[in-house]
Amino acid sequence: MSLRALRSLVAIAQHGSFARAADAVCLTQSAVSLQIRTLEQEFRAELFNRTHRKVTLTEAGEAAVARAREILALYDGLAAELAAGGGLAGRLRLGAIQTALAGPLPEALAGLRAQHPGLLVHVAAGMSAELALRVEAGELDAAITTEPVRPHPAGLAATPLYADRFWVVAPPASDGVDTATLFANLPFIRFDRRAWAGRMIDAELRRHRVHTHDGMELDSQDAIIAMVARGLGVAVVPLSDTDHAALTDVRCTEFGTPQLTRSVVLLERDDRPQSRLTAALAQAVIAASGIRKTQE
Image (cartoon, rainbow, N blue to C red; front, side, top):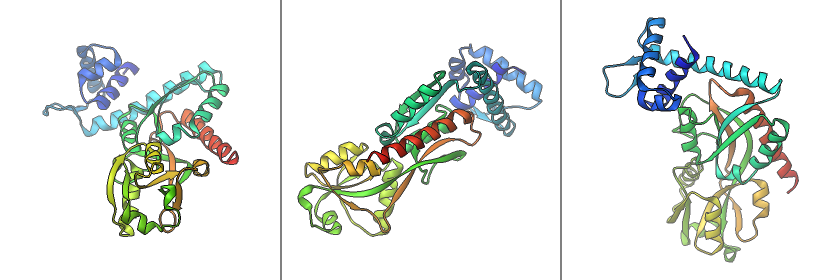
């Protein structure tokens, strides 16, 4: 059994085909096939169902992939520790929602770079639901998302980082108008329902039997607030305390009874293949969010 064969096994499970896995590990498809046949001979078990057109794992294959991820994580973690002389080194593929990118993440990454120059973090933006799927598939090592809401991928662990509160944002000219009247009379600028925050808002509106008149559906919090500031409708958005305090061109009212909140978390797989790196990142984000709050 070789580490390269285990990497090929994990790549097939991740990409769903021998051809794409071969591209990912920089080998020919025939070489990857030979590696898998060798593993099956060594394990004395079939790892893939060969009666289906689509590549699927057998029960033994699923167990082998889980163990392969653990073995590769241990090996890669050891190499990183030795290279960094006890510090952190290596690559972390991180996803992040827009509010984290505009919030504490830059400060956290700057602190990590200063403390661990051997650590390289690649960042990709996206919505929580999309990023969770990429973590589950192994395309990302971790992601900063909102706390998972159903339906969500299984096999993910969430570490709380900080919390946001939800606010009804309305045009400045609506000062003095109650929330029920705002929803009844103004177009509703909806937070994209593909996002977990959008699902939370929808559930709370249904719980309070609030009827809205949909005008737009956007996935950018900044764009929603800009539309509201121009008098184009009313909306509900999650805001950190710092961002809420900085808003001057819209009127804000607490949303929900009690006020709806969301936890921003660090999502990773249950097996935590990058645990030392993600633990350091979580600590840095928590510290950065505390600094932003005290600077409010």
